[in-house]
Structure formats: structure tokens, C-alpha cells
Amino acid sequence: MEKQLERPEIVEIARVVEEAEGIKTIFIKKEVESRPGQFVMAWIPRLNEKPLAVSYIDSRKGETGITVAAIGEFSKKLCSMKPGEKIGIRGPYGTSYRLEGKSVVMVGGGCGSTSLTLLAEEAKRQGLKVRFILGARSKDTLMGAERLKKILGSENVIITTNDGSAGMKGFVTDALKQLLTKEKIDKIFSCGPEKMLKAVMETSRAAKVKGEISMERYMKCGGIGLCGHCCVDPTGIRLCMEGPVIDFETAAKLTEFGSYYRTKSSRKEKM
Ligand SMILES: Cc1cc2nc3c(=O)[nH]c(=O)nc-3n(C[C@H](O)[C@H](O)[C@H](O)COP(=O)(O)OP(=O)(O)OC[C@H]3O[C@@H](n4cnc5c(N)ncnc54)[C@H](O)[C@@H]3O)c2cc1C
Image (cartoon, rainbow, N blue to C red; front, side, top):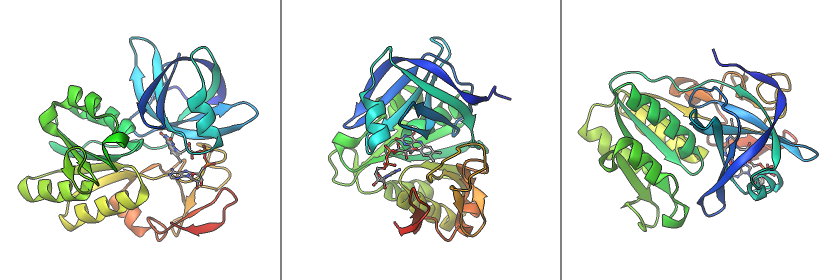
């Protein structure tokens, strides 16, 4: 069982790496003992505290990485921070992916691909056959491909872009359908934009292959299960406690999955 920090610990930023346009990995000088799929709460004093998936763990250097897309006030500030500056970290929180079978496929898009990479590393360590389908809108927004190729070998990394500027032209689900018709796959894992997750789930279930997704909602208390902000309809599961990783069966029961989400003030909005 990993050691969980219930109060933010103030940690120093060791280095910042640009992953793609508007996406950076912030490495902190602390090894957060976590399992693939779990998240930490990152705190910038006087601004906000937000959940972010653990995307790198470097035990040798004693560092943890979180990969952030600069889209709003908090994430833009975090992406502008420099080595030597400090943030608060608590966690890890939430459920993690569960590897099963002999042959697994990971399907990632955007920032989500970096946290799945930790799972790919673990699966490889366990001797499983691992394929990674990595999707992006275009070559410029593609991220994490080189890291994945080093871990899994180029032949096991399938790249898709919507415009065909890198890899196969199309969506991750096009590549997934091709793989599913050719081989026996035991389990599929996916992280990325929700519409993509829903398409991956539907494609996999049609082929009768089980799997798990990581689902995001606004979180306030984050990992404590108190505020109810991340509850999803109609099951009422709290994504900060019973998620963010849930299996296809649970996701299929959620009426809001891929259709609507709740704003910061809890109002329902169509996706
Ligand atoms: C379990 C969990 C893990 C997460 N892991 C990561 C991670 O590894 N990296 C990361 O960058 N973020 C991650 N997030 C999202 C993160 O917590 C913040 O929501 C995100 O950084 C934006 O916060 P902000 O305050 O900068 O922007 P906000 O002010 O909250 O949002 C700015 C604008 O972007 C929109 N928006 C917010 N979130 C998203 C989204 N996910 N996709 C598209 N539009 C969005 C909002 O509707 C708004 O219009 C995770 C969330 C959860 C619940």
C-alpha cells in the first residue's frame, strides 16, 4: 500500500519538459508512490488545487512527473512555473488500472497518453504483449511517441492522426478495429477525451473484449469523497474515490458518459 499524503506537502519543481504545443511535464523533487491511473492534487497557493494524473515516476532521481495541458488559469500558471519554484502535492488518490490476460492494448489521446504509458511500462515488466494506439489531431499535437517506442519498440506503437500528418489517417478506433479483427486481445485500457473513450468502449464491447477507462470530472475536495462534485449519474459513484479508473460495465451504465458533464458550479452542460 502506497503512502498517502493527506495534507499538501510543499515540493520543489526539479525540471519542466515541453511535450507538445501547450503541454508540459512538471517534474517535482519527490517520488509519489502510486499505481498507474492514480492522481495527485496539485496546489498553487492563493490560486487553486486540481487533480492531475501521475505520468512519470523516476525512482533513481526521486522525482514524479505530472503532464499538464495549458487550457485555463490554473494549468497555464502551472505550465509557466520554473525549476526551483514550489507547489503543494497531496495523494495519490483514486483507483488504478488492473492488468489481466496475456495481450493488452492501450489507447491514449492527448495528455491521457502519458499516464497510460506508466501502465504500458508495468505490463511490459510483467511480460505481457502490449500494443499502444496513440492518437492526436495532427503531428503538432502528438505527444509521448518517442517514450513509448523506447519502452515497447516501434512495431508496437500505432500512431493515428485525424489529418494523416503522422502515422495512419483516422481515429484511434479505426486502428483498434483493425487490431481486433486480426488478433485475440484480452483487455483494453483507455485515457483521453471522453468522446474518444466512449467510442473505444463501444468498439471493444462489440468485439466482446473487456477493459477500463479513466474518466475526468471537476473535483473540489479531490480524493476525500466529501463534496460530491465528481458524482456521476445515475450510479452516484464518486470519481475521486471509486474512479477515475472504472471498467466498461460501470461506464456503460452512466447516462452522462460522453453526453454531459457538470461545470465548476455543478450545472449540467451538454458535451
Ligand atoms: C482524475 C483527473 C486527472 C486529471 N489529470 C490531468 C492531467 O494529467 N493533465 C491535465 O492537463 N489535466 C488533467 N485533469 C484536468 C485538470 O484537473 C484540470 O481540469 C485542468 O488542468 C484544467 O484546469 P484549469 O483550472 O486550468 O482550467 P479550467 O478553468 O477548469 O478550464 C478552462 C476551460 O477548459 C475547459 N476544460 C476543462 N477541463 C477540460 C478538459 N479536460 N478537456 C477539455 N476542456 C476542458 C473548461 O470547460 C473551460 O472552458 C485531470 C482531471 C481529473 C479529474
